[in-house]
Length: 204
Image (cartoon, rainbow, N blue to C red):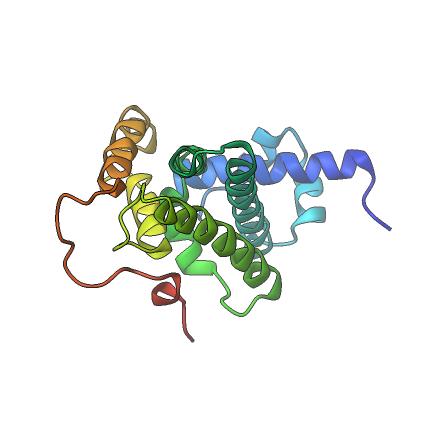
């Protein structure tokens, strides 16, 4: 039997608050503060997420799922392949995956079935977006989905010694610069080979 509607809303509020606070303060942010921002008691938080790792797991699943949904929505809504890719990139930017990367690298279980399935869904739709734009000769062919996800991660990560909130003013500007660099025909020859998603698999 599924959760009651109020329990589902509480869980969603906790995950949303956790994502915000992890972006702002890092993975060791106080769970009490997460509960406070979510508008629930500590007991409610621990009922849904018995420890920090369980909460991180929930956040990663939620973020991965939303990014995949943004990619699918862009594919369905935009007839122009480049505009679909652009729409996805700007939507994914708002999830601030770069700021979450340190958290994920510390606590991500590469063998977790739920996370693997969510990641595979995301990778499939991102590759579809990119390949469609490349087939339309709108995006250079010497890049792969790994290049796209690395750039998104780097462009949404605050510089060392700076507050996350200071990055907000520049993210859209720098993401657009990156997108311009993807346009075909290419104006330069990239060193090395395209970065595939397989290049970034975590191994035990």
